Length: 172
Image (cartoon, rainbow, N blue to C red; front, side, top):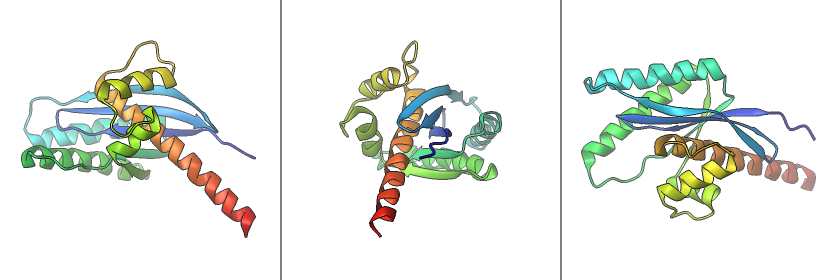
């Protein structure tokens, strides 16, 4: 059975700080390629969104991921925050579309369940598990850890989907 190495970019969008994490995945193994944060300037929102889109597109062109994964929007009590997060998410989606990447979306609960084994895990628990799973020298910043967790979730989820499809093929 052929298990090609896939490169996945995970994106944790935010209007001030957008985390990114790029991993490789082959079979049940994963490793870290790069991670970091896009910290936007204190410009008006349209310039911050453009910066997010431009920097993500540059990262995609440099690292050439095969797939992208992003966190689904969740409910906010503050409608202004929700709107800004949605706009930052839109900038990230435009960057992936410009590079012809397919994008998978996962809820925060799914991501935490996949990485920590508990859907209500704290940010610190996610950060710690990402550090351990990817055997990083030190724990990444919270936004980058979240992005790496999103990429890990996608690697696990897509691997499971492939196995289910293979099993389905042997049953018919």
